[in-house]
Each structure stands twice: as C-alpha cells, then as structure tokens.
Amino acid sequence: MNKQILVFLSIITGLLSCTPETPTDLTKNTVIPKPVSITATGKSFKLNDKTSIFVKDGSPELLKTAQYLSSKLKPATGFSLNVQTTENAPASGIYLDLETPKTTGDEAYELQIDNKLLTLKASSPAGAFRGIQTIRQLLPADIEKNTVQQTDWIIPTGTIQDYPEYEYRGTMLDVARHFLGVDDVKHYLDLMAYYKFNVMHLHLTDDQGWRIEIKSWPKLTEIGGQTEVGGGEGGFYTQKDYNELVAYAAERFITIIPEIDMPGHTNAALASYPELNCDGKATELYTGIEVGFSTLCTDKEITYEFIDDVIGELAEMTPGKYIHIGGDESHVTKKEDYIPFIERVQDIVYAHNKTMIGWDEVTLAKLDKRSIAQYWASAENAKNAVAQGVKVIMSPAAKAYLDMQYDSISPLGLHWAGYVEVDTGYDWDPAKLEKEIGRDNILGIEAPLWTETVTNRADMEYLVFPRLAGYAEIGWSPTAGRSWDEYKVRLASHGNQYDSWGINYYRSTRVPWNE
Image 1: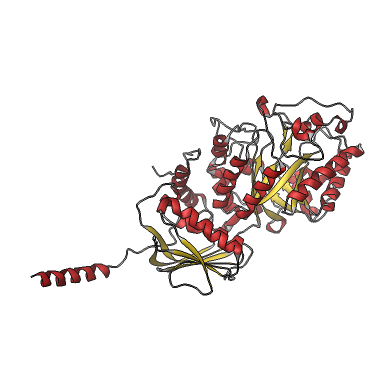
Image 2: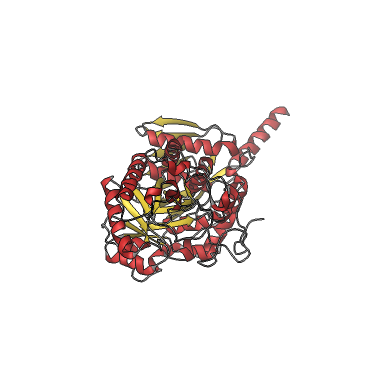
C-alpha cells in the first residue's frame, strides 16, 4: 500500500511540474519613460534567493552598477544577490555586458529576458545603469518597499531595445531662495536616477542667498549665505559638500551643472562685497521674492576679477563640461551694458575650458556657437539662438516649470506662468512648440524647480511628483509613441512606488490612481 501511495504521489508531482506557467505579456508594462521597442515571448523570469548577478570581466563601473542593482533588490526580496565577474555568459541569472546593442548611442541598452537568464547589454556603463532602472520597474511594484515582501518576483520574458530621444534630460533645483541640504539633494538625485535623467542643474546663487563656498571670496557665504526667503537661517555647501554631491550624482550617471546667476539676481553677492556695487556700498540682505532689482557693476574691472575667481573655483570642482551663468531678469542692467558683460563672461567660461549655458536673454549678445541658450520665457530670444547656430534647452515656464501650482487651490507654488496640471506638463512636444525651433536645434529638456514656496523636502516632493515622471518621458521616449490617455494609466501604478518611498506627492484627479 505504501508503495502504491508513493507511486501515486510521484505521478501527481510530475503532473504538477508539467503544469504550464501563466502566460505573460511584456508589452503590458508600466515602465516610465516608455521604452522604444518591446517584443513579448509570453514566459517568465523568476528572481529567487539563488539568483546571481554576473558582470562581464573588464569594467569596474559595470561591476558597481551590478552592486547597485543588488542593493536595490535586497530590502523587498530579502535576497542577498551575489555579484561576480565572468568571462562568458552564464546559463542562468542576471548578466550585464558592455556589448554594443542593436540600438546604438551612449545610453542605449537592450534587455533580453528568457525564463532562466536576463541579459542586459549596453553600449556604455551609463546605458547599463539606465537599463537597471527598467529592470526595477518591470518587477512587481512591491520591489520598492523597504521591508521583506512575500511575493513571486516575476518579470515577463521578451526583448526591450531602448535609447533616449534627447541627449540632455535635466531638472533644476533652486537652492538659493530656500536652502536644501546635501541629503535633500541626494534624495532628489535618487528619484531622478529612477526616471533616467542625466543632468541636475543647481541654481546656487540669487538675491536671497549664496550657496557655494568660494575660498578666494569667503564673505559670499559668511554674509550672503546666512539668510533665505522669509528670513530663515539659509546655509551653503562647502567645497567638500559640493564634491560629495558631484560624486554621488556621477555614480548615478548624472552630471551636475552649477549656475552662478549674473549680472542680475546678485544681491547676496552685492551685500557681501561692497566693491561689486557701482556706488561702493554693500546692499542689505534680501528675503523677499521680487526680481530684477539687482546688478553687478559691469563697468568695474573688479567685477570680472570676481567672476573669473568664482568660475575658476567652480570649474576645478565640476567635471561636467557646462557652467551656467544665468543672465535672466537683469532689468536694471542697461542693454548697452548687458550685452558686452555677457560676451566677456562667456570668454571667461571658455578660458576655464567649460561650455557656457545661459537663460534665453543671453541671446541678445553674440554667442559662441558652442554655447547653449535655455528657453524659459521668450520665444523670440530662443529663435535668436537658433539664428546664431546655438543649441537650445527647452524649459518653457507654462509647460515645464515645476514651481507652478497644479491648480488654484494648490498649497504650494506660484502661477505667474499659469497652472501646470499633470497632463499639461506631459502633453507637449519640445520640437513643435515653436515653428522656428526644430528637433535639430534642441539639445534637450529641463524642468526647473524654483523654491520661493519650498521650505523643506516634503514641499519639494509635492511640486516635483508626479510631474517629474512626465518630463522624463518627454526627454527619453519617441514622441510618436506618447499619449496622455495611455501614459496616465502607467503613471497611476507609480503611485505605489511613491507610497513605498514615503514621498509627498500630488494625487491629481486626472490620474486613475490605484487605491
């Protein structure tokens, strides 16, 4: 009898092992930004405690990326996924390889997902890092929780080929109006990395505060860094802090672009050094939110010595190729003074082997063809950039400003450029906004967050999310494949991630959030 029972159990076990797995469909994913091409094969790759992550020999950066993936997957799965190098592709597990995928470009990657082996091929370590974010989003949403979850960690099988539409995909953080500390900036960098951004523009100086240590001009932070909008205590980054942020960003393949706004938006500097004023008298520190009342004295040679020192120290600390010089809203600088000022500052930037970026007003001057204009307010200025053969970063305030209120009852933000609901922020094409600014004229897209009303991390999160995900998709995904009706469903599922992260996001009624 016992023998018969054993035979019976053996048959049942065999039948169960042959039970066909539930079909899957890789095309029905919620990845943001939307990948370029997806082909589904209907099976499943399952992550378990025996899964290893293999890295093709020869790339320390790729090994770091594999370790990053392992660390991101551990909290929710409880798996300590082993990371090891290999000369040849394994039979099972996750395999990262710097092999040129079928889609080319610096950040291109390809995912080949079979039931036993998930292979990530990339043309560069940056491409591999972007592909890692896709893997995170293909797993069940619980993967972003910080405690162990009991679930099957399944990824549908198939192939994803992906690469960005624009080479520059950024967001700006204003730390001058209200100061945000190193940990807050790192938090923002982590959120940016999830959505494949590659640029963080740090607005470091303004009328209300100077936020970066300049050793040759120490009063900039001793005096100019000590307040903010509303009269708070302000703050600043030491050069060590700044280097730490640059390194943290670089680990996520994000370039930090520092901005020193000039000749306007300079009251913090003018309050710190009286010699930068035309009358030789220091101004009072400013804690309001008006603009356009300050200017460096463009006729004084000391002004250019000051700028050369500041740009020089920043250039030494900044491995990226760009320095942003602002140039916006300098209403009290006469045009005949503004133009030669911008041209001379441009020369200073290039003397320090950096490329100049400026807000669209800088196009009033004669620009070097290597320089970049950032369109925020004036289409005419942006068209003037195109006429000069200069590339444009698209940041139109009425579409891309993260500090605009969602609607009339939003507790944070301003509305001088209008209200920017989640669909308004998503549903536009940078290459069709202005007839004279075509795709070939555009370097990329940037979504700026000005902080007049932002006093802490929670405020920052509320204005950034969920709009940031939409700007990521505009910058990365082909325009032809984008639609609000399809996107909002994918975005709705990301509310689960936001809840897992514990971030303060705006639950727009235009998005069908999962309850």
